[in-house]
Image 1 (cartoon, rainbow over the protein chains, first blue to last red):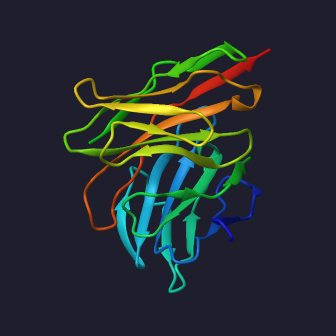
Image 2: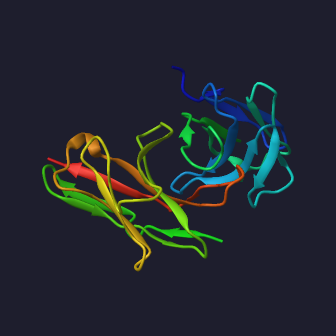
Length: 112
Length: 116
């Protein structure tokens, strides 16, 4: 069975640009969450979606936005990129969003 | 609000020796507790979890963790480590609120380095 898939695996962007990261959850999982992991730190919660509705938002600026599609896949968008946005972005899916999260391998974003 | 403290940023240990990675949490509500492992350039893999019931939980590869409510701790232990256990270990908590809005709050991680 396919796990949580994220694309792209790596990308490099310039300051001020916009980026879209994609996540496909495990089949049957209706909840998707996004986390940012800066080098040397633990993951920080960005968003959670369940049944296409936002159920939680972390302490991130409005430059960060996300959505969940009818097939439960999700996109994370970041506008006006800053150097500090360089990080590993992790997507996690779960059946109901309560527990049992499975993480993808992440997208490594480098802002130059 | 919840917080997780992993007191040790790095733990060096010789192969076949025992190890304990410490985790303390703070929360005003009941929580679920997790340990995740991260190998270099990879995502997070669930190692074990405490949801309810027995306070001692075990993984398939020999790790165990014990939930201690009075000390708000969830320390990870292994009686005999292997080189392949070298990785970053993250402790995490999630509150028990239902409705699909449970986020994970992570500690800063502990780098376990197993040496020959």
